[in-house]
Length: 132
Image (cartoon, rainbow, N blue to C red):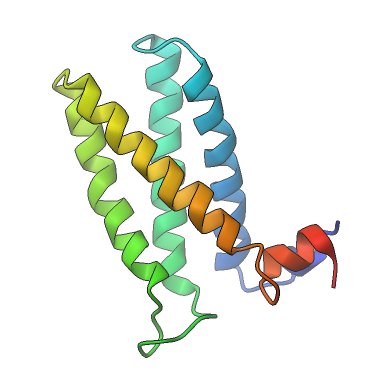
């Protein structure tokens, strides 16, 4: 395992990857920790900022091009950027079940599923994890 391929990539890629890894770790903490507490809200805001960074940085990643500079994964970016404020709004309006559902959907889709796709051969994270 070597971080060299990631660190040698275009600047948006390491930003995207490290923000995603931090968001994944904080997301796991959020699932395990008590809900509605000050730490939950604080970590939640950090997680939302990290997810926004992950989503926004993806607009500068164009390694898979199916529609000009874009790929279907960019639809997930748009979905994430729309759902993040909706999830926060649901929490602030005490619609906890909706908040939970939205945040789990973002976590599972934008971090877990998309993260698994980064491990496919030919991708930078595949090289980081499994070597050349």
